[in-house]
Amino acid sequence: MRKENKGIILAIILISYFMILLDNSIIFTGTVKIAAELNLNQTALSWVSNAYSLTFGGLLLLGGSIGDIIGRKRIFSIGLVIFAIGSLLVGLAGSMLTIVLARAFQGIGSAILAPTSLALLMDSFSGKERTRAIVAYGATSGIGASIGLVIGGLFASLMSWRDGFFINVPIAIVMLILTAKFIPTDQTRQLKKLDIIGSIASIIGMTALVYSLVGSQGRLMAFVVAIIAIAVFIWYEARSKQPMMPLRLFMDRERLGGYIARFFYLGAMMSMWFLTPQIMQTQLHFTPLQAGLGFFPLTIISFVVAVQVAKLADRFGNTQLLTIGITLTIIGMFAISFFSAQVGYTVGIALPMILMGIGQGLTLSPLTVAGVANTLPEDSGAASGVVNMVHQIGGSIGMALVVAVSATVKTEPASYHLAMLTATTLLIAALIAVIGLIVPTLKKIA
Image (cartoon, rainbow, N blue to C red; front, side, top):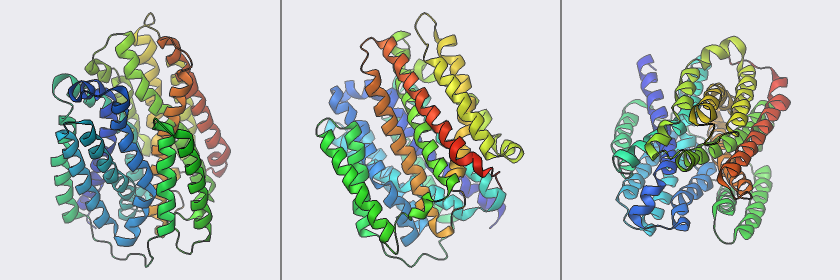
């Protein structure tokens, strides 16, 4: 494969993944305008995010494994088409029902694109090129979410929230054309059948789990269903000759540590991304645009650090970067928990965000590397699905936990303090996973 083609392939993968992350964050800063325009109450508004989360989280494992069967280029193209149509329908939505259904449809596209993009990356690169490509992919996961808050604020304040979704359509069309031209067709596909029972159990289990966190009624019953379905899924996968998620993925200490650490890390960061724009608007009286721009210290620093991660990993090793990155994020998260209107934005938010930006830049790429470390070629789709599943489910569970804990305190500044302290605890759990499982391997990026 020509070097310039590899650059285009990496761009296709990263831009497609960036679109998914962008839309997830745009909702955070655009909710007020969406509610006002469509006349939605808080319950209805929550389903604008929840419908997307349900289909995204519920179909991730299936999306990661189906490309192994019908071809990753083909399923990636299908994902782009679904995501583009979903984005168009969200932008055109004129009622609660239409926007919720459109967001659910968009989530199906994301569930295909997220794991398939990482699997395509692993297929297209090897050796140090693969490591650098995975580092770029990991950096995109953090930067995309942060920039989404800024772009969401821009659209909500200066244009229309609808434009944040309409813009996906031409981008997806361009990516689709480039995919057809530059991404090679799979030379060989695995001769295996779709794991029907595993697929059904995983969809029921993950969808019920997400609903138990974000739903409004029957959450306990949904949680019971989730536990039963996930147990059935694990039991069946352990006995299947062609599982959709080989349990051997969890036997490697580095991968397991990467999954657990990512779960807790994203839970903490998603909570901060969700709650901090709100506290800036209520306590500091920022507009949505100002709240989005208020994330610049984190976004810019994270980007600057992330582009240096490949060089730093070559010098210090993946494990050392993870340890330092999560530690800095812990310090930043602990510091932001002391925010108040009296302390102000600069000291209370901006300075802690600088620490978190450095930490995020050092952490997310190495976590992605750890999550696909030592993976067999035939497992790359499933491994990519697990990485993205942990990312999505960890964020949902962590945010639900943090919001639930903070809701026990009625006054807003105090509830925010408690929320960020809870998020700090999640980060400490991520650090423990790295120290306990990944540090003993002492593996540098190859």
